[in-house]
Image (cartoon, rainbow, N blue to C red):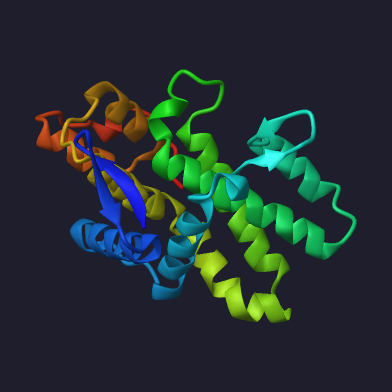
Length: 210
């Protein structure tokens, strides 16, 4: 049995994979977006995997934590084999999706913000889809990686809703939500702002689209 916190309480979750599957399905329906079932299943498995810290963090001997995405990209560039390169690309996409989906608020005032993670993650999944084409693994997961590359921002929005639902709070940080909208053009961020009476003006700013 796994537990999660909601409004200061700990609520038992009997099966974490089922919880993520239901939560992601609900968020997809609520937002009215289209995410391929295979891609959604991949994300469910990813969240279940990363719920174990030893799968998310890396033990470097003298340090334990997340390697910066830029260094992961160096690993992909310097990889000796296609298999090693594809592993590094998948790791970039997976970590970027997880961090942008669940820890976007912690990126505020950092050297890199959520738009960096969205760009890096989407690009990594896109490269992975292209480079695995024609392989057994590519035939199995190429479509999933392509879907995640094309809809990275959408999936991040879905995970943001899953995160907020788990918190059990409807309060939002308007300034941070507005900043996320400025950086990413997130449809969910725009919707949340409008619910608070804030009307984003798209023609007065320069936003990055993904």
